[in-house]
Image (tube, one colour):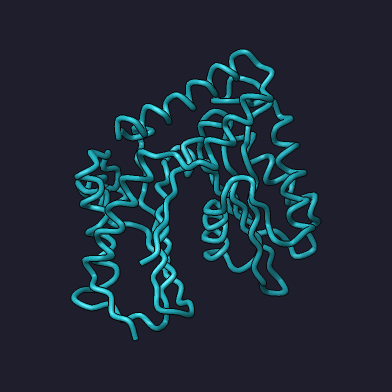
Length: 280
């Protein structure tokens, strides 16, 4: 049994929050540059150039990529041979988020009560998803999710007899309805299966996959590519001002479900796809 001090988790989460918000991942930058080389719209090309330049400035000056520094979504893979000491896991994570948002000069966007709307002042609480896995390590993935793209996300409970084409239409329609509000080019996370609550988590988890990395199942990977191509034919374009680059990726994750159910969730992520991970 390996013991890990809670403050180590706090320090790791703090660093991940700052890094995610100021250092756009190489896979996303590569996808933006690839999109720039293919974009035919002059306006679209200029917007993509500005997004790439913005990422470079943020990295150089350690500034937030976007003023909306998001909800802190934390996925934790907790080794079953790990014992956390001198503190509790949720408290350690939230303390890390608090320190990261203060020390990184990141906007605090969380409100304590969804109706009274009073800000918590430190961007906590985080949304924490914990999975027990084999081993004696803790893998922490932080996704800082902006509100604009999150607001464009949708869940639909399909009939079990629904065809893949109907699900495909739903995914594309969700992106079309989002239009410029999700700050395209977007990344589209799709969850299929599970239950009403789990399918949304599945869709968000799909966003953690590197841009350009497809589902391990060949038929699903093929479907991802086909849907991406159709989304990019909608003409929405970068920031909704026209062009062929509406999405950078479509990531689909599936899970078994009840015989009478077929839940589908679409979780949209903006061009500032901010995700970092570390292993303790």
